Length: 346
Image (tube, rainbow, N blue to C red; front, side):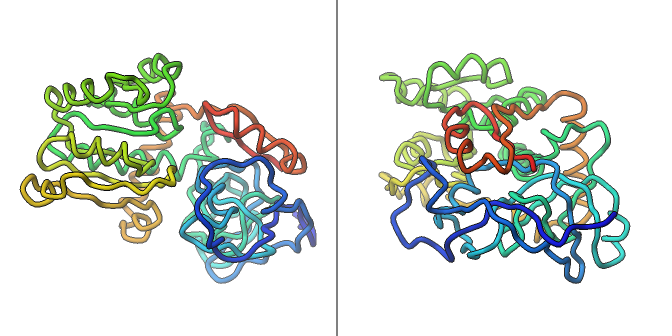
């Protein structure tokens, strides 16, 4: 196919980290952070592929990144966006040539070429060939959240308990975990902000749902910690409520932090539990797992994830699909709707 010399993209307006206090997911306008502009078509380097983007997902990490509040610095003038699905149209290296013409899911964007564009260059090694039966809506976001869910569920399997606590449970990742827990005979204790979210989470597989604003929240949590004995807290919020949940959990509990959605700095009221109850606090970052896992481990995980989507056990709930050229105007409002993913299409 004949490739264009240029492409359209949502382009970062600032470099590096903001250096300012975190403002979280609040986003009234994209204007301080992005421009819709024309860029030269990216050229794949050694071991890279050029992907024509079909659909890109919008994750919380994307919002933190464009605002300079993520762990990786921005590159001014580069396209934003971490994750998506598209067709490989060029590349360098043996594996890249094998991928040409295939539909792939990819993760990239932190160091230059981004997914919120018509084309992206990414490492061929990080691309995943997508089975034909998989929808673009599932493929576009099936690396970050679903693979994270699958790998974190392994921590639950190894915990010695058949229950676990999950905060921000109405997120796409929380919904995936609810189904995974139910299908494997585990009990997910879901912590949510709104009562209106409870019934849907139970339908998806959550065994227990706690609303954090409930006046009886602490007593309900204490009873569940006593009866179910959850030993893993999977947490994307990392605030004082998270610390209090961890404190209420039994001996050998692990607080696994994979995000920081709240700006509050938590304190551990009973640090002696780390010694005398053998509790642990740790982080989980999918990028580190991808670096350390064997190729067989990666392939097995991705195959299992894709099969769950194809079978219908998992489904990406999309609240709105926004055209790239309308994103400056429509994306902030789409994100405020909540309840599911927002996708971008060229």
